[in-house]
Image (cartoon, rainbow, N blue to C red; front, side, top):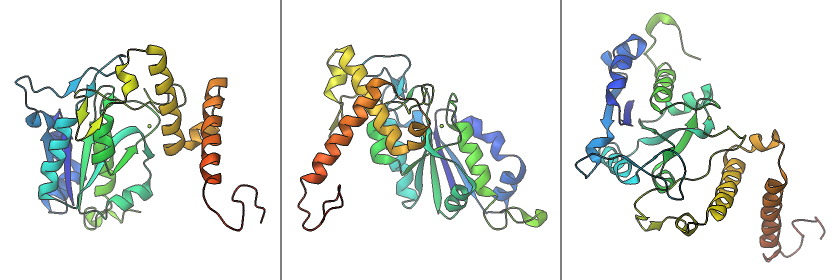
Length: 262
């Protein structure tokens, strides 16, 4: 198993890899590790990895170019490696997830910082997002260490004779909206026009809608346990009406898919 971490703080991983079961697994050849400095994949003299978010708001967003270049570089060496983003918006991490990941040939951990990562990178370069819980940390480095530790214990031989080894999201009960930063066009994809409009009311409306749809698609359980306000209910009903319209527009001889009538 090969663990590769993409981070702006590669030195954080040295003490983790030099201690305990992880160190022993490395020495015995059960795993190999590497920390890749994202700043090496920047093109400006300041080695910039983040920029201000389109549409305004607090904090910074990690730029897509260094992230994409780093993933491509690793994939050239390990094409089958699975790219994992440490994110509070990901699926919760459980033991069965660790077991599944332990069967991979390699894992590329993307450690975000600041407010998040440019959405275009996430959409095109990430195989899956994983969360270690419904709370927010300053970066993805510690979650990556936790997952590496859990996965390492499941690799045959790593435990020796010790015995066999057997998610500011959530602040409002919703996953955070999508993020975009410079450049305005990346690999053929452009930033949503509303974020460039300067219309702050329209931007907030767009952010609420993307927040709701991301929550519905990734963590619907959060909506089930949430008291929705009037505007959120209106948005969800609008989507429901649109989905019904699409279904009814499809040629479906025989049964009505919505009513059950023949």
